[in-house]
Length: 155
Length: 191
Image (cartoon, rainbow over all chains, first blue to last red; front, side, top):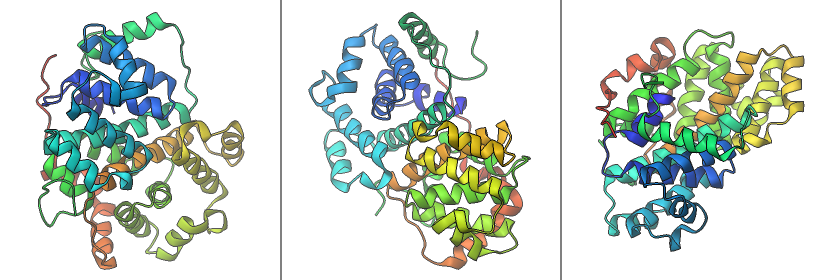
């Protein structure tokens, strides 16, 4: 589970970790999972020099956020995956390709969105304890962004 | 028609694993741990949970391959698998498994749909904490796998014998061994 998150969000990719964490927090927001959306929001912000405003713009109104058309097209796909795999249309994929998305970026967007549909259900399905102190998430985000998810990370 | 240029002749998730071996490895390890490794829930029971969730998510490939694997674990009882998909409360399975399928169905709708009474029902039927945990995680994981397979519009054979054959191989050998040529450790870049 952690290895999957590490590969998906921090492994080598033409999508930056900031972009990938924004996809993760976007999907988690749509799934209304407090813990996941808040922690990945913080991770995204840490990849973006602390720009929480941009991350929140993506979460709530991505079409008007200051991100690339390519990322917007990928977020559209992520939103469709959150609803269900079959909601992703050939037109959505074509629009993403027109905006410059590669096959790898399309693949990873779908898998990140799908994986967060798993993580969100896992966390909420077992009603895990959810802290609410913002500072805790800020620190969590720093660890997620800079040390990663793998078990080998320094504590 | 798949959304990506995938290797031909590899159906469903296998084409995706060949396309992206770095993510194939953790995905295969996850499904092996959840569905095939030692557990107080039998592999047949766990594959039924996976099949049920996949049918609720209307994922053709996943429900058919995991249905076939489940049937293999259950002495070839394909009719039982169909009944569980259609109406598990009337199926010839234990009350405990019914209570866990109930939880799995809630998870498929959304994590917050699992209510205390669903957990109470499972505990009253003798489900342990680990069995409840694993049920939720299997259901959640299949909400991922189903979206992955359908989100990229992978192709799925329609021949029942294909699934029977593949189901027998996976039921005997697990997931990591049969897919080992499709997974690779990622070169993790430091950020």
